Length: 289
Image 1 (tube, helix red, strand yellow):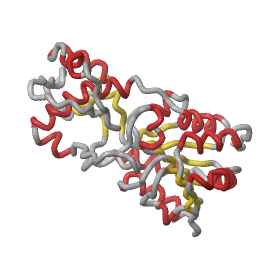
Image 2 (cartoon, helix red, strand yellow):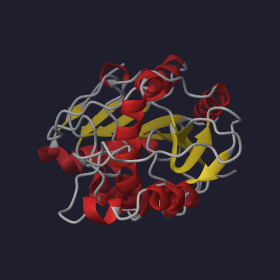
Image 3 (cartoon, one colour):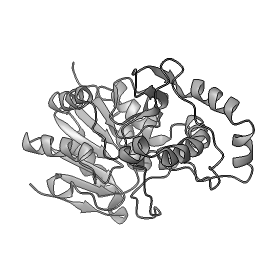
Image 4 (cartoon, one colour):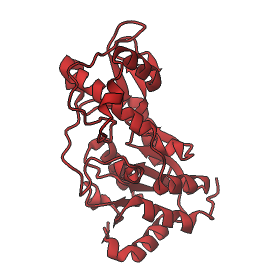
């Protein structure tokens, strides 16, 4: 299997090769944080990204101090994510879905921007920022409902923390230094521990979600990866699965990825421009159902 590493200076050639690889095929798409950077949401592992240490599942459930810190910071960060809007990359993929080129999309992001862009068939592999789950009774509530409860328990905290501006990480974790006085709340139904409906590091993706994602890859003729370094197995497994089936794999990402050696084509470029060019080229064609 040949692999082409094409930098920004070869943008025209890479756009043409990507179009030729994708054109005429039903394409499954796997996206990562790199598709959302142009919406103001930073990524974890881009070439210019600072070192980040996300909280693990074990820290969250096992240490009240870590949990307090998380909820204090998330109380600020989720608002920034909720206010974010799709960029050209999200809109291009939605156009390709409407044209029948993209047959299904799996995203590792929790920002809901593909859905906001009008994409219809989306699997939120790692969950979304917009829901909260009780680890006791499994009840689900909206993040807005929890925000109202947290605001009542911590009047003025959000306004004070955002007065000078804050940085927000890809998982809606805001950089807030003073969290010691923040009061958490428990499940209103059973008093159990509340956790964002997001898959943390050290936590398994629900089996049914993984199975549905494999179904998306199985039903497609090719796999397009956009904006993911494929560092974690939750995304890399789909690249391995497609390659094992002999399906072409194209990767669009800034910098190298863990799946490059399995790819038919790699494009070292930003997602917005590359995917917009692809949608412009293929948007008028429709793949028969």
